[in-house]
Length: 264
Image (cartoon, rainbow, N blue to C red; front, side, top):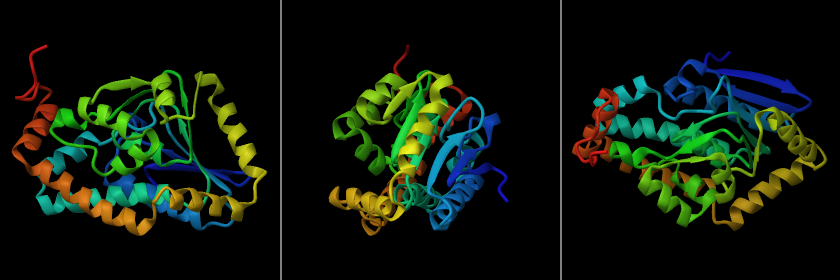
């Protein structure tokens, strides 16, 4: 059914694995569309009690695919806006999924990959994983994922990481709230299974209501999220076609330093 995903069901748990290991599970149009569809289907399926999101191979998700970025660098502002809205719909679908979700972070997560981790109810990662919100190095911002990242790690940490674009390790990700748990690779599945066992003891209706309760009390609802997504899509589209965005994307694709970068 899917070309960019692997799905497996076991004891009421649907595991969705992004399956583009050759590009570190980077996003392109196909992966975004398939993942949005697979998550929505899991949310509707009464046989699914919980969803585990992970990546095939060595990485969780490297963010934007190189070829996809090259296409967006040449696209119009309107095309970039529609592209951003599709990614926003993916994040929103995961954030408000009416089932418990676990991010099984098996390796590096950058950009949109960090967004997926932030949208899951519980995130468990291997201790060797690296993370980054590096968009400013391209003359861009992490607009689409920003509501979910800020909700996960707070405004203070977000301001630092959005502005520096620095990479950080798994213990740091746990300390700032992106990960709930950081474990050795050989303990990852056991840690995920322990969370799933806890999920299985709770009433599914109560879990769905508890999730809605937490989001509502925090001031988050789908209508508000859609309004923010439209504003953020406008922002990232404008930045991608701006002179600085074009220089940043061009420098990245050409594997050179951007014009504004200070000498090392």
